[in-house]
Image 1 (cartoon, rainbow, N blue to C red):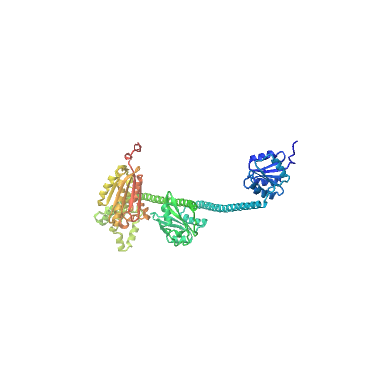
Image 2 (cartoon, one colour):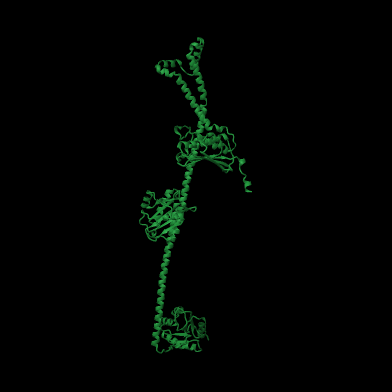
Length: 638
């Protein structure tokens, strides 16, 4: 007959060993409901839920001793007997178990009487303990030591956790700061890269850095052209304005953080500026306590540096360097973009000015051509008028030499031609009769009349000479291979310049040019003549004209340089315009360079000037090379 498990007493067995629990389960299953727990903590929880009639507690359990577990179980279930099952069969082990509150003690290995012993303890059996007070006191002392040790461990754990919490908080704060720095650096980079005006860019950048990062001061230095100085180009607040007004600059050396960052291309940091002997002490920024200098690098070259300063000690760390350097890199890119835009605008302006002057020169040439065509008949007409006047004067002076019929006929002819021309001779004679004698003598002065004719003829010839000199040669071009070296040497010899003045250097592979020799000779004659006049006018102590020639791709490049006073930048574009001259009353029509430019352009070449005041002038002429003399690229590659 099967027993009803709902009416069987419940026995809870707490043991680590699976084998021990299996053995107890097999021995007691027929008479009891066996509950199992693998450790004391689970046993305490299960005991509180099931309220068993008896608790068997293995002596060898983890996380707490059997005595501690017995004490806690007895306090939680004061009416439930607890029996310790132990492999330690000594009297001391039994006494400690009973002192802890156990009702009984069953030694291992479990014997055949195990089921009977369980029944007896379940029915109220209690083992007696001799000298219970002594064992109880020992157990209490042991328990107190254990509690003290656990308290100490718990305290250490709490302190360790507090330390770890503090470290985590610092780490989170550092990560949060770095995140903010990176986020702000990205925002700064996005804002500054959209500004293409350099001055506005630098001013906005220092303001953004200080406002976003709450720094005491920020400034931007840019490297000078000679790379000797770092000039302050933007500074924050009043201190920045004062330094800008004072044209503040620092030498690029290792005596300042700005200089070192530019030289080394690496960030410099001072957490306590008072301890930095090499740091430059800036009187405009007395409250600086920490400083960082970040190089501005474009294409591996330092173009400047950013200084970031705080009025707090230890304001920066390595993470700040990485974050702020990323921002500095964005600023460097923005500065480069602004410079490129500035250069592009300057190049566009230069191109516009050049094209404007070329257009003026072209228009002037066309105007001269038109005026020349109109002036061409003047010399012939003046010559005929002079001839006619000569005959009229002779006729008037020797009227008596002609017979009356011939004279009358001549006078009649004059009257008829005058009438046909719309002249009323009678009115003119009446007007002359009313004039004072001195006015009448001046009016019919033969000398004055001939002088006016000479002036008209001379002016007309000047116009025609200008036209011929400017555009005449272009009408008759005969391009052929020309050795510029031989041509220029011959030109210099014909000019009669002192031998020590002109130096010539020619590349061995310089090919002939495909040009009109007569026109190109005019080009170099004009350039060398202008150089010599500049030297003699300036009174140069050791005048030199240096001519160089070489191949330049499919062209021949020849330069003419002098060591004279140079040509001021403000007139370097005007020199190509027709009639512009710097010689004043010393002669010259201002057509030389204009004609030179037209000749070079008509040959498909280019001409330009490089000059700096006080350092001479150098003209470059680039003309097409003769194709037959150019090297065969395919043969060069084989």
